[in-house]
Length: 140
Image (cartoon, rainbow, N blue to C red; front, side):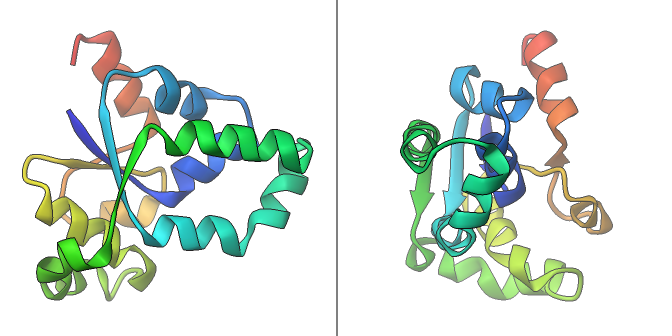
């Protein structure tokens, strides 16, 4: 299964050693995310380090470990889907248009996000963390 990982999932995994981190590191799924994920992490990195309780060095180790599991896709690759994605998600949350565009670009993919606003659209299937856990427990 291919999951488009929303920034909130990655941030959750960076801040605490919980279910999101466990799933990102150990699950058998293939993860993708738009390159805007890296911008989001870099922009708020100091805040995430503080919230995590980790040293900067420990945070970097966790970040690098998680990012090794996620295929980062440049905007140029999914750019053809941005207009359609904006129609679907732009009026709900413009910051998430890239995730929808990437999901449209990668056929058969599902967005993994715990942001409730993704549920306001019905074009792209969205799994919450609990849904990802159920998929693993149910044998995909």
